[in-house]
Image (cartoon, rainbow, N blue to C red; front, side, top):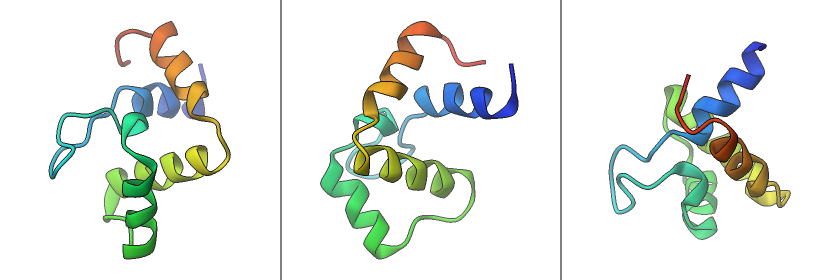
Length: 77
């Protein structure tokens, strides 16, 4: 398994650590919220990178990719 696959599996299991949607999987965040972060600026660090990827996935209609990964790998690596 390569690094990109591991990152996608981790992304599929990452939850929002704070705010209104604390505890919600990043892929399940409402689109408007992710767009708001895109306009405001993503946080620094890994969370910001993950939110930016979620934004790109939602923008391109690829959310099911992450949901399928979460089903295939029910536990994070």
